[in-house]
Amino acid sequence: MKILSRSYIAIVFAILYIPILVLMLFSFNSTASTGVFSGFSFQWYGELFKDARVFTALRNTLILAVSSSLISTVIATGAAVGLDRMRSAKIRGVINSVTNIPMMNPDIVTGVSMMLLFAFFGNLVGATADKLNFFTLLIAHITFNIPYVLLNITPRLRQMDRNLPEAARDLGCTPVQSFFKVELPFMMPSIIAGAIMAFTLSLDDFVISYFTSGSDFETLPILIYSLTKKEVKPNIYALSTLIIIAIISLLILSNVMSSRSNQSNAGSLRKGKDKLNGKENI
Image (cartoon, rainbow, N blue to C red; front, side, top):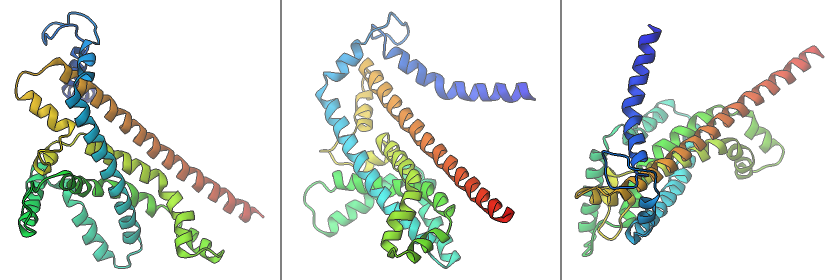
């Protein structure tokens, strides 16, 4: 059974990652051939960095990813605190279920529905220009980012000792001061991890961006799609390799932050138990 399970895992990983490794390998090919690796070269990366359209799309993508991740993180943090303090468990459960809908929805359904929504409101206010622009794209990215950030913050907030904010208020802190001095620092590792995840999701989103972006704002995934309609050039392999490296780096950073958060929780619990045991012995 062990051999079968390991073989199955190996096959799954091969299917998932061999195409990516092949793409990364041929981004360093000295020729444009996709069948023969002629030699190691950085020439396609040089061609990539000479393309002004790529840098414009990269700038647009970074602006969109940073803006949507920051705004969605702020909204999700406030929502997590509000849900945590909500007294009715039924209402909290309903809100959590509704919040998870964007994660369960197929991207194409979300993209088409938001495109129709923006078109409807554009006609409602009598917009004569292009109804889809940077702001419609930003709203769409914030919408699908919020549930993922909320999913990171909510478990962390549930682990917090409920007596800590009360103790801070007993020592003279206002509710606002208690939040910023006690609750927010406790949630910060999860907030950072959620922001990194939101940035990653926004960075490589194509389907929703394709339906909610206008003609004057082009992101990297949309640019890559438009370029692959014709013959795929090797500089696209180089661009895809850089995107893959960036996403993997962010995911590793997010996992490191989560593991450190779990270790700090375990350390706090151990210290609390040691103190309790010390008092009992006394």
